[in-house]
Image 1: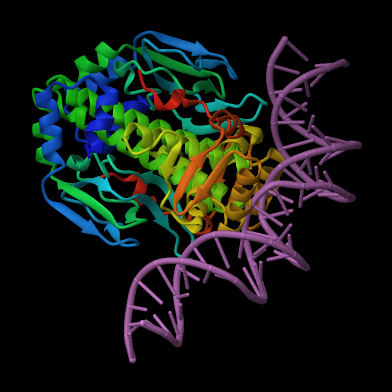
Image 2: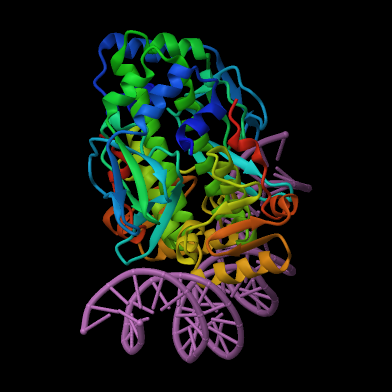
Amino acid sequence: MENPFVRKMERHVRLASEDRAILDGLARQHIRHIAGRQDIEGPHTEPYHTHLILDGWACRYKQFPDGRRAIVALLLPGDLCDPFVFRRARMDHAIGALTPVTVARITPDQIGDAIRGRPAIEEGLWREMLTTTAIHREWIASVGRRSAIERLAHLFCELHLRLTWAGLADGTSLPMPVTQPDLADALGQTSVHINRTLKELRTSGLVALRSRRLTIRDLDGLRERGLFDPAYLLPA
Amino acid sequence: MENPFVRKMERHVRLASEDRAILDGLARQHIRHIAGRQDIEGPHTEPYHTHLILDGWACRYKQFPDGRRAIVALLLPGDLCDPFVFRRARMDHAIGALTPVTVARITPDQIGDAIRGRPAIEEGLWREMLTTTAIHREWIASVGRRSAIERLAHLFCELHLRLTWAGLADGTSLPMPVTQPDLADALGQTSVHINRTLKELRTSGLVALRSRRLTIRDLDGLRERGLFDPAYLLPA
DNA sequence: CGGGATGTTGATGTGAATCAACGCGGGTGG
DNA sequence: CCACCCGCGTTGATTCACATCAACATCCCG
């Protein structure tokens, strides 16, 4: 199976075979396995490396003192946990594995080396970063102004495209390995209400979800329901 | 009055006087005035320049087809509307003036020139960007998991620090030129409820707000009420 | 001095939270 | 290999935070 990181970068820029080899090399060193529900990077740390997700899903989250949890980003295979480790900023949040996860540990120097003299790689990383920021904006808009069903539909549409570009979707069918409580923390709701909303999406014939796999039955309908416009995921 | 952009950059990095002169120069060219409620940058454009806010408040926002508006970021004096214009990405949102605004128009080349051979400036812009991203994460957490009163208290605390660093706060008293409908679109609520929440913050003695100026009466209390931890605004 | 946008308050409605109960499934330890 | 059990999914009953609707006060700008 091809490397989801390379797959995704090739959507941003045209890579020479040497570029591809360099990026692929990053993904083949210092492989680590992390159990589901474990932190990949705890809060308040100043990480020395970043992690490239190779398999499984993770999330950025903030934990409140009283137990509330807010998931502020989902990290899928091909995503870099922190492209900017080299700034050595202290973590203001944590990164946790939602499922068992395989990562490649990467040092800031390795990223620097990969960029040096490789404008396509640098450009690709920039675009990846712009996309990530656009996703953040969209999440703020979602949680702020979209209804429960719109939010869920929108998230499914986002994940559909992101997984497609990482080479992990099969047409309109995609892995969905997260629990309803996880979705609730990502969408700012309760798992009970996620469940009811999901039921509504199902009974209206837009999606099917079973054994951790989502099948989009009516892509146009789902996008309309979620006020989803793919433009924000397509920089440049 | 000193340039709020330079003020803020000096909080990130130590600037040589030449650095300071370069940054100050950026803020003194191509000054434009924009009326309140006008767009600085419309949606779907591919802007040729970025804008540095010199005076007044603006916002990034997304407009939904049915009229709903989500404000996804507030732009204060000293903020760059888009530090990454040089990537020429198509806007997936708009930038609008919330009050009358004075901006300096800056070309991508000027930013490139300012960075070249000036590591402090480059480092400062990076940190500025990391801070912006951290604010995005915090907003997602706010709208997702904070109650109405926590959200408003948290926003006030954020604005207090940002304005302080731009040299625009007077101790715990700060300009607050936005309307309650604007706050509502930023916090994902209605203006009516913002009004009631504000009243609650007032009657509990945490803040005073009149003639577009917020005075924080009890900073520790307000931070506690908003679950506010300033760490996220302090990269590195 | 007039009028539209904003601020304020009350009455009422509702989407989502909370509380509760139970089935199911997969992992674990005996 | 089976029994247990905890987390998850599902559904119903009830509550509540916030939205909606409405009326009026106030401010600011022309």
